[in-house]
Length: 235
Image (cartoon, rainbow, N blue to C red; front, side, top):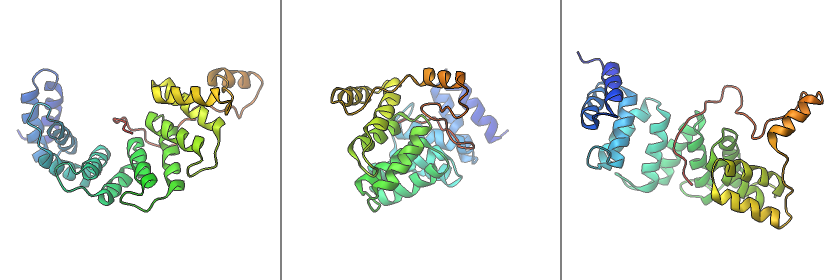
């Protein structure tokens, strides 16, 4: 009967079984203004999943979803602009969309903003601000943010050199499966630049038993009210 929410729900249920039918319903829901359907249709078109890849059409649907405030669409539209996929490359406009998503709590967008700031692409180079964005992403558990923050700390980029804290973030990323972080952590310790940090859970447990009410988790949890978005990481 034309209800976009129902069309989107039907498309989601069909996607694992009949992708072609799902895409037809995503398209109907997207044309009806459903932001989730617009973002999903854009993703499928951008990556050529179930349909021929069509970056220009993907950009058009990402724009519509991003204009409605969809964080993933904002980040992905920024990526399309940064890479010049489906439209001319424009890192300055990419930075604007990344920042919108980053301000809403997207850890992936926070990393993307930081990378532009570190390189001075589309924005004035600002290593201090880049580190601040990386720290926000790292605290949310974003592996790429943890690795990049650790690199900055180990090299003194945008922040005073701190190999001990760098080792802690390298370890946090390594525990999520980042091999580069594990190698960097090993190199730091082999050079004697950082002592191996105590096991976070053990430290927390011991502190609690000793009556220390200020014991902190590592990595620290997101600040209250911070949205945690699950998105694809990139370097």
